[in-house]
Amino acid sequence: MAVLRPFDKLPTLNSGILLVGSAVAPLRGLAPPSLPRPFARRGPAAGARPCRALRRAVPGRAAADRALPLAQLVGPDEALQQRLSETILQEKRDFNINVHLATSLPLPPERDHLRPRIDLIVFMIDIKSKYSLKKVERSLAHVDASFFLGKVCFLVTGVGRVNACSVEMNAVCKLGEAYCSPVLFCELELEDTRVATAQRLVRMLRICAGHIPGVSALSFVSLMRKSDDD
Amino acid sequence: SSNGSGGPRRLSRALPFGRSHGRLGVSSSGRLIVPAPSSQEKADPQKTAFLLRKAWTLYSVTPLYRFRRGRLRDYARLLGAFIAAEKQKGLAVEVGVELDIKVALSSLADLRGSELDQDALLVQLSSRSQASSKNSEDKVVWSGWFCSVFGDDLSENVPEHFTCLPLFLTHGAESYTSLVGSWFQKTFDCCFRRLAISPLNLSWMVAMWAGCKLDRAASAVELVFSVPRLAQPLDISYAIHPEDAKALWDTVQKTPGEITQEEVDVFMDCLYAHFHRHFKIHLSAAKLVKVSTGIASAQCDGIVKILHSQYLPGVLMLLTELAISQIQ
Image (cartoon, rainbow over all chains, first blue to last red; front, side):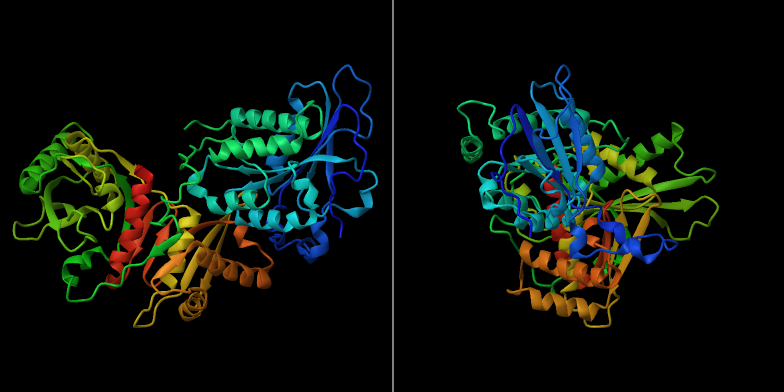
């Protein structure tokens, strides 16, 4: 089974890779009656969904080369994922960012040799969907333990609509504690918080990619945890 | 709360996160103690019979300032005058029908839980059409009642001169509700807000109510889900035989009289897994909008129907808790 390992590839210069994941729109099984059965096929093998990569070169630099900083977003709502990644890429920065989107882990093994080293994994949990929490919990099994030394964070979205809340907050906070990773809360439908969240993620990505001298991912995450306890 | 750039819907105010209180009386240990069903001798079922089998719209109310039980008749008179004045102003409540509205306020001593709870307050608007004869009975056109069942969290901390009745239930035309509400707001400086029930709270309710014992044959346990973000809106209704639901809950619940979040999660996961096995649809990603059991039914937009007098205090306790968490 493909397990993501943080250090199995060499880092690339002046770049950060972000992996954003979310559970796939779970109602693929809800094909309208006219469509043939194959659209409803969902098996464990189908969980390895193709991973789409968005990349954007910093203006003034040479054309983006394949090995760019990689952020992987893992989570349920593809539209929101897309919007978040676009907002991330619009952030002003002086290093290249590559955002990969996945609906769940494991990532398809056939493209493994093409995929650069992942610097930060963001698991997106939608407060309105219990399914997204379950999917994220299942995806966590496909991540190597050394990722949890500061290279993983949980992003809880939809917190503006607490009246539609299906996920219990304690469960999410416990998940963050169990995996020693920070839990960020945001509302991606609002422009302002989306931009603020993107800024936070870009800053975390810089640290995780090793661009900030003297601050490692692990020291940053223990700093965040200390301030949470206070 | 501000409008999102995408949609016109208002965002709901966020509860402080990490707060263990604020969801259905869950203590910091994550447990809910369910009060035993009331025995028939203590509460007079006749008095509370009018509450059953009606669809009540829920509101949360902040504490009333300087509300005096002794002045109920005065209040009724003032409210009646207010309604008549509003009608004169041209805020016609019903077009084409001339109605003389009479107001009655009364206290209901049976609807309370703990010692700190205040007696419930019932407001009834009745009308006598001018066409009908003098001897005909008044017809109740609108009723609303304030209550507090085990609302100790609010009552304990309230300053002097305030009366805590955080739950307000109405049945009748919306125009009357707004008239009565604005009079109470002006007179007692309180604030009404529509009470919404989140899917998380609805799942607590269905787990609790499905597990209750009913003497006679009960109606099916039904959950209604709405599926967001599809081209055509879709509603899924999932009905379970009440005995099966109760049997499932009995295997899940460890301590009788006590419910934890884990038990509710396991119960709901079993239902979702069963549905997925048959239809390949993940209900956990859809939005739970309505639950209905033999005891009571509840909708996410804050409409509740209570069907069984024996479990009335238990249901009211949950709703009081929701109202308090919306106020605080």
